[in-house]
Image (cartoon, rainbow, N blue to C red; front, side, top):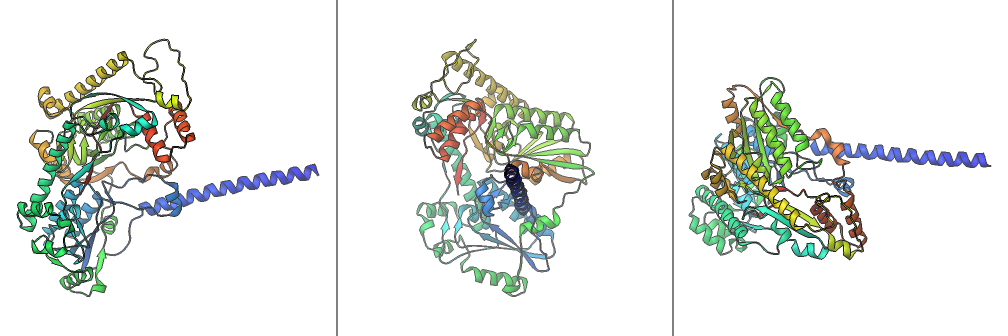
Length: 592
């Protein structure tokens, strides 16, 4: 009996483990399948008299990247793949020269993107128009970003029941001071620069006057640029547009937009497709609409070998750990390897970052200096953001290109040290510490800083600022005092940044690539992008973003036991894990 019991138990045990192993294998295969679907190219044919259909809908990001991991979404199979700016602009270039493509159809569906991204797409459409092919644009409703792109079309249609949502630019910064007080987290601040407002949301309850003033100037500058180009394309006066916006044209009938020349006609989508069919000489049902992804998969196949221009993407927050948007621990070796690669004749660093860790920014900047020391041309192309740490890594380039609507500058740094003494007391935690020296436990999340520690932190921040300013002055070939006069943590539009010497040219990624090719005396070359997304899919899917920090983990578990929701837990974890030196500008959510 005992033997039979042991055998049954062992067989059940083995069976259970086999089931677990099979489940894990199945899960990995399932995730691999989703990963494959996420990165899979669209297949199809570009037959004669095709029309490129540009869908301005959903989220448009800089380049293909891994999504934030949510296993409930993974299991449901509802991953949304954002469109990429790189894919859209390449497809427009290819469509312009592809003899099988007769026209471009821009379908406006309320895309989610920053002003500089819309401007880059608009410029790509303008380049497409030089081919002589007709551009149609249509929207059930037209938001500012979509409409800004659509205005360069040969004809702009609006649904008769729709609206033209021209409302100006607005941005919202969330302030968390009262929330932190409720949780029991105090934040002690050291900073340099009166405009360095990225830290304000954690120490103040409302926006300071310098922060408000710089954003007011920034948004006014960007809005004026967009209105001027809308008016130029539609042949209307800017005063007329401002009057319509101030009188809430967004809430008016579609026919009002037609009356004032902002759209050409108010018709339904099926009728628009009829006009396209007439133009290319076919029936509506026979129009072969091709996607940007199709053109990207068929024609954008980078070849290796021979002379190469490397395009290195630096997108997101700068940090020193796996899972960060810009992880210096992986980006630095990549840059060094490109410097030593004999096939690589030059580099374009594509920056789309509001900054982050001072340490990470400094490491990347050093690696770029190493690349320059190899006597290869280095250009920077700025996207939506290249501010604070994003500008730190840009400043040493041989040539800097920015979109007129890029947010850049923010030359300043701050220190933020949280402590949870109140929270610990509220949840019954009483830390007791014995130290041999006063600085051994600095920074500690359980104790406020002493006056000596606060002074030491401020001195550290000021030294970091001097290093930042010195790097910009050297890279831009400007006096230190001048850089300080335009620094102070202030953000600038690309337009203003060119005027004050923070960028060299207004232009996009292709302009930067062309400059590197010219400087490198390259007639024939391949453009290869780095880093490649697909190489670490499974590692990233199974990676936990939570840092190994015993003190923080104990606090988070205590908060969880008190019933705080997941949003609050994630927010508290993010605050407590920040490095105490940051070169970061505010994360501006600009509504179009």
